[in-house]
Amino acid sequence: MDFMKYFDFLVWFPENVSTFGAELDHLFEVIWWIDVAIFFLTYGLLAYFLIKYRQKPGVRARGYHGNNLLEFTWTLLPTILFGGLGVYCDGAWETTKNSNRIPKPDVEIEVLGKQFNWVFRYPGADGVLGKRNDKIRTTDNLFGIDPSDPHGKDDIIIENDLHLPINKNVLVRLSSVDVLHSFFLPNFRVKQDALPGSWMKVWFNGIKAGKYEIACAELCGASHYNMRGTITMHSLDEYNTWYDTQIKGKAEQMAQAPAPEAKPAEAEAQAGEHHGDAKH
Picture 1 (spheres, one colour):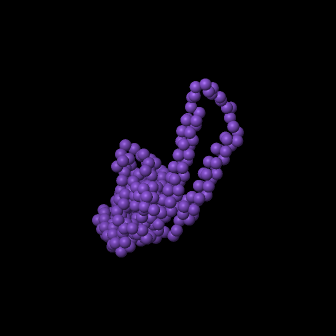
Picture 2 (cartoon, rainbow, N blue to C red; picture 1 turned 90 degrees about the vertical axis):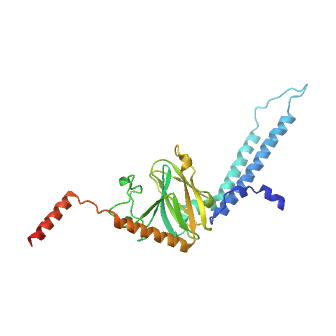
């Protein structure tokens, strides 16, 4: 019926562009209407008792010590309600949050929260993310990429500008370098705390191309409001074109980078080699 559209508060939500977003929206709607029913029931009873037992001339107030049956009832009913909701929501929880239920990823990236930016790491041309070592993390190496691992040399680092393909399972490994942040993608119905020292798995599958907001949903400092980014969802061909451009840019950057200075021992060895060559 047309009048029911006025009770559909989901129209105020950001557009859902996730494969599991509709299921989460349905759960939200169910819980919302249960809350509405409880609100009107409790406040309706409160209004009724206020009127029925209001002060009246010639009527003396009486007090009651308690009613065990009533207290047992209002303890049991919420227990049944919340237990039932837990069972009802379990399927959606398993789908979205259980790390053992994450489908095989098509794209894997790492995301770091940092006051006040989101930093993303993609694998380079070799398709493999380099090893991490938090003990060597610096401001110039936020992910702690191990310099001894050749897979990490071509990794692509980008801030606040995430690009992904539609209709592909995306696996995000999420952490923070400083304080507690919350990785929030409203249109994808994704929200996960980023914890310093821990790497959390988050997954989603976007079904519509376009630009969407990345926000921080945890108060993380004075410029928390400014910790925002953009996620651009492409068709697969467009994403591959963008990704190839990043790989090419990284290769040019690596080619232009100055050669690392030789350590003292290495310098002496090189000098000896040159001296030996001169003798021949």
